[in-house]
Length: 434
Image 1 (cartoon, rainbow, N blue to C red):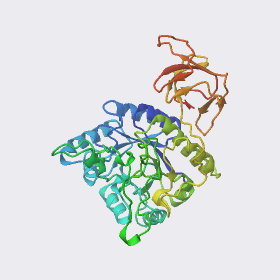
Image 2 (image 1 turned 30 degrees about the horizontal axis):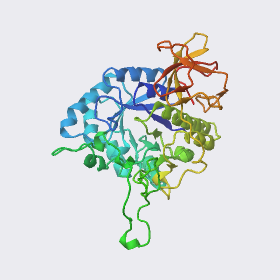
Image 3 (image 1 turned 60 degrees about the vertical axis):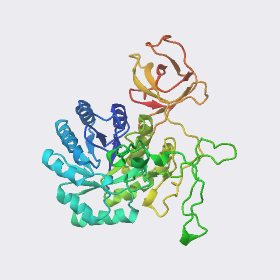
Image 4 (image 1 turned 135 degrees about the vertical axis):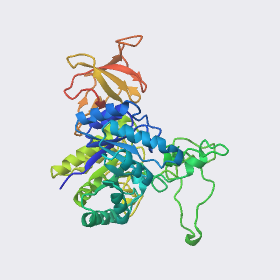
């Protein structure tokens, strides 16, 4: 059984370094051309050649995203993005629009074309269309059920040998059809005669994550007495006024996680598993990437161990994890995942060695610091290794560039640069701790 490629997101250089450290087979990123994460820092200008060189040094492939739905006036930017990908010697392009694919064949003939999940491919004729247009891979629609994926895999094997299938395996879902939602374009920054922030150009403001309060009962005529829409199911921390209901994110879909089904997907011959998150933090990516790489490595060794990986994913989950539309119940949560257990995201990231003997490290805080806690400092090492530095075995101090270098620190905020005095063979640049 061949293990699928683990395709990880890279929104900036730090997240790229994180993906490389924690187990990427390949990464996808944006450059100057239109892509679906316009809010990510991306790799404009010289950033893309640097990214491809770094990834290649680690044996990791780089796919450049041009997966927006460009308007006529955006086509020059598409051509610019294609030229940039060719010059940087990327390993492939990710597109969602037939026009962009046509331009890619013309301006980047040597680069493989991968079809984005944004193209909503759900049938074998769609796969054949993209193959005939020149694509070598398609990421299936995020809304595909297990039976649909199996049918497409069989059709691929029978009619399209060599064509690769990719599955969206972990990350945010959309309340519409793979990003075709129009809420953002209507609700945010709209001016007379102008469109608002459009999801199809990577500028979605995610109104589905806004906090709302419903003052009506949602009931459908033909199903009287039944809830047509389950509202107020995900409470936020924002209370209502006295006597009023609190605010809620009832439009917000749960996050998708297909880790439990990785063996089945591998047996089908799925070539790649995509993890969403170009605008998420590097701390989030470290946890998710490490859990998925651990699961796939255990699968390759014949002893698939999903529970350990799922227990780790709990720390990164900001919303409940479900199999989404893959299974019969889109809202059923993943088995073996304890929502009530405490979540601990990474607190700091190692930047560089502060001493050559490995006894001190320059670090950056990624979350709030409370060094008075009693559970110690847990290192997040690749392979799901989680050694704990007990209290008293480490200390944090102000860095040399601060006004009070060497001053012990027990409280801190994200972005602070400190020095961690600790010794452990797993400590090295890029490692996170919590």
